[in-house]
Image (tube, rainbow, N blue to C red; front, side, top):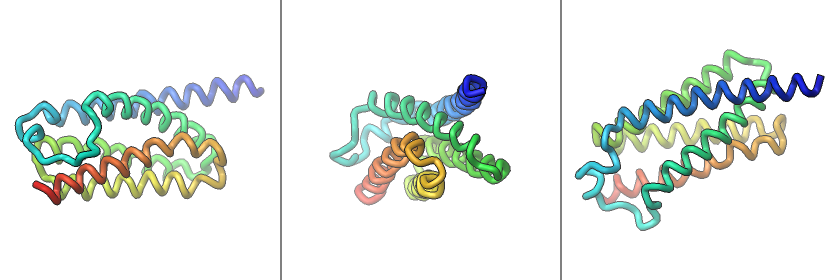
Length: 160
């Protein structure tokens, strides 16, 4: 029985992984040449802005961890419709930030989106920490990265 539950958890994590990486791909596509654009290259960026390669590595790790977290949460949470609604909201916010910031250059709107996403991921972390215990650690990288990303976005808004 334990073996079936483990396989089931892997299948659920795999589904979330496919969805999350598809969202990352769509967000990347919608930002066009965002980080390589003249607009972005000429911005006054925060001194703590990581090198470009860190973003890809971070998002890959974050989405793997978040997919595992969502699989644990899927097994734990009885209210699946609420969980799906929150997950879809997370997808919409995550995907929309890239074009709003990089393509449209709406830095304030992008900041609002990323702060909303940070609050939502913080909600996931703190609401389910009691029920998931140590498994909540899988959403921590997402939350921490969003805090950093929000600060980068806010710096650009304030200094450009």
